[in-house]
Image (tube, rainbow, N blue to C red; front, side, top):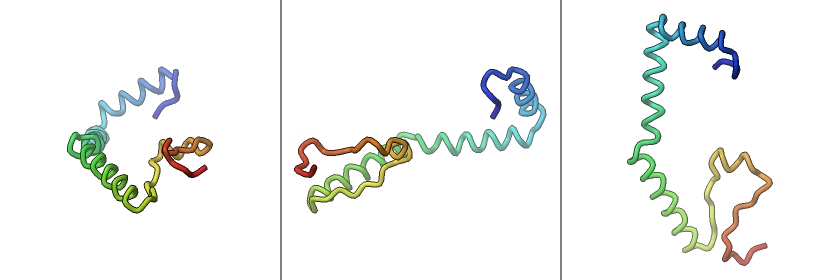
Length: 87
């Protein structure tokens, strides 16, 4: 990572990736692994899991879904079901 707006460091980082075969291979491999996390089949399975948990929670009248990292960044905002009788 380079600081935003630092053209010299950006150029140096690009040159390093171009000249370092092993670094380039590592970046490529890690990029492919990261991209697989967002494949349609992986995302579909995550949605199915969420729906399954919601259906189970409706059956037991309790909701136990761990929030993801993005949700945890906003602890001051509560996520509630609008039809919930809880306050």
